[in-house]
Length: 147
Image 1: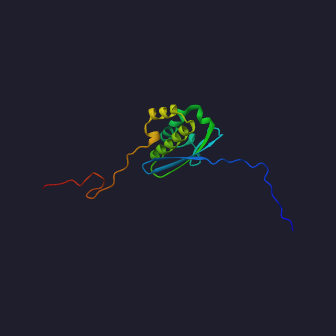
Image 2: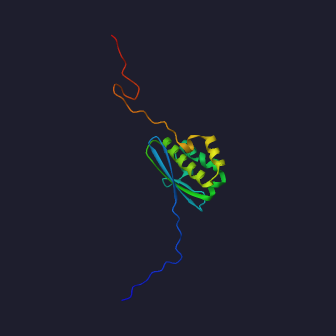
Image 3: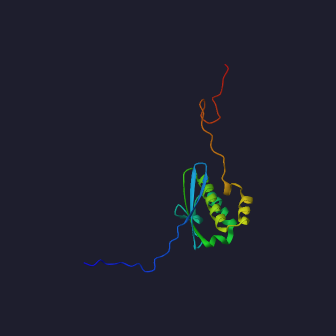
């Protein structure tokens, strides 16, 4: 009994996409960059150009507008979860900015990003303060009455 040998004819060379993280408050984003693309950016499977709400879309597009024509060389798929819509937009913008800066290997684009928003590459350290006893929130307390 002869076994059939299957030969693969010219297998496609799939390069592993490089991952770039982004975070803001409780939102986490991960951008997978593949070279040789056409400039497509998808966030959770949705093209960035039709993402809603509009204010979040414009915030996510800010690093893309800074890089200009470099966008046409790469396709980026971003997965984002956690937090609110604006915090997710910040996390996506950070992961996109890190991906483009890493691919250009120059200080020029990094300086442009930092001049536009210093938290695009380094992250915003502000977090919500934990709730304490004696009131409904972190700082607010019940009103004291003397009579």
